[in-house]
Image (tube, rainbow, N blue to C red; front, top):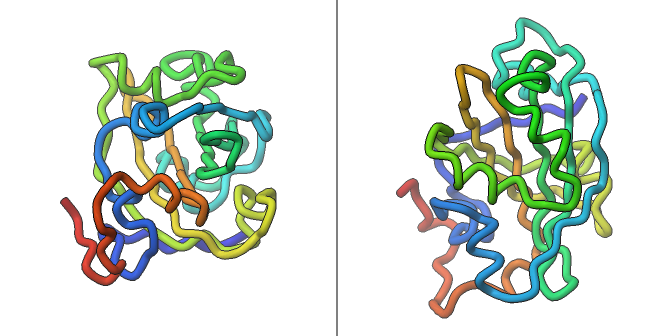
Length: 182
């Protein structure tokens, strides 16, 4: 199992303007061009150690995982992995199993009962299940959020691929070392 070390600041990570941005990533990407969601996998899997901890499981257990690729103008820009526990899959977060090619972000930001905790940041190793499926596997900068609905957590990891820089909104990017929490 890959070990991921999550931090509270995105220092020394590229794509910082994307990583640290608040609000809906889906809405931000949709505003930039033709946006598509491709489902890579949806299944019950063994939780990764950091997922188990974030979901409040005492040890890694089987969880429901949805992995998708977000594309702009046909180019892969973000890989995302959503994870929920068994109880949440039948209750608060059952919508995750029904999304198909629809973005999770649209649901997360349309329901006022859903709350998001603070973002965390890390490099995902090439052995991470989300990254090893990418077209050019390499360690990738990522962010993680935990969302809550009716007392149940959902963990969302978003890995930002180098192509995202083509769509950096019309401003000069700061070197990654200057990026801090907002």
